[in-house]
Structure formats: structure tokens, C-alpha cells
Image (cartoon, rainbow, N blue to C red; front, top):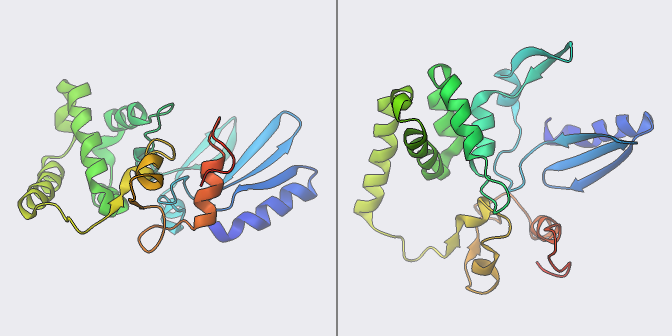
Amino acid sequence: MHPDECERVLEVFAQSGFHTELTFPHWLGKARSGDDMVDVIFSSGNGCARVDEDWFEHSIADRVLDVPVRLIPVEEMIWSKGLIMERERYDGADIAHLLRVRAAGLDWRRLIRRFGPNWRVLLSHLTLFGFVYPGHRDLIPRPVMRELIGRLQREIAQGADEGDPTCRGTLLSREQYLVDIERWGYRDARRGPDGTMSDADVACWTAAIQGRAPSAA
């Protein structure tokens, strides 16, 4: 849902007898009643895939358990899953399976815009798709591959931006790149000015890592 609707939705759940909490203020609330739980999602753990009107405008009408629903658009699902590369969870197989059955109908322009400056991640998934399914490589439009490979070639020609101290690995994993931030002096891409998460958001998200000391930032 839209970020500004989360509080109202949690209030409705609370009025219906659910226990509610804003588990992570930058992306997720929860409503519980006995063994039942509903996630109230308005962004992603890395703060990149924030829900906006496009999620609803391009949603897919369907029925689940005989209830009319609007399903997440395929483009937004690929975008939000594309940046999940944790040690214990990697959603690349989900993306490969989605591409195998839905690539022909994708709005590729919109998908590329969604990834924005993180287009290298999209290129990596499309490259892996060709590795996983050599017989289906032509499902990925050649102009899309040419555009993304062209961007890569231009970046290679320009060389590294040696003045940029950013580590974008934290957009892929909240744990595996903390050493870059905490010990090696890199700037966390999740924080401003380029990121969307505050210091408090990052601290809360990091403290929830299983087995990590609560005092870690």
C-alpha cells in the first residue's frame, strides 16, 4: 500500500481486534490475531522499491481463494526481488521463472526505469537468465540487452569514479556488506543523500539480523 496509508490500515486492524505494530518504520507493519498474520508492506527492506501509484495502476486483476484481488505487477515484482541477495535468501530463481513465463508481455521500458541507477543488477539477472535457460535466451529482447550492455561499455570506457566512497552492496544485503560500512569507511548507499533510509531506519533494520548484537548500527 501507499506509505501514507499504513498507519490508517493498522488502525483498522487494531479496531478489529488484531495486535498491530510498525515493525520497521521504513517499509513494514504487521497485524496478528492468534496464528494469523498480515504483512502491511509499503516499501522494501533496502528502501528502494517504495510503493507508488504505478503498483496499483498496473496491477493484475485476479481471484485468490475465490476473493477478487489486485496482484502486484510483474515489473514491480522483478524490481523488488531483484535486489534481494542475502546469504540466506536469494530471489534470482524467482526472477528467472517470472521471465520464463512473462518476458514476452513485460513493459521493458518501465522495468528499466524502475531499476534506475541500479540497472547493473537488472543486467546481471538477464545475463543469468541466458545461462539458466540457454534455449530461451531470445525471450529477452535484443534491444534491451544491447541498451544495458551499451551502458556497461560506456562505464568501462569512462573508468572508475575514484572519488565515490559509496558501497551499494547494502542495497543487496543488510548484513554481508556491513564490514564495508563499519570498518572500511564506505558510505552506505541506503542513507541520504542518494538513499531513502535514515540512520534510525538502518539501525533498526540491522539490529533485527538474527544473532547480531543489538547495539550494532
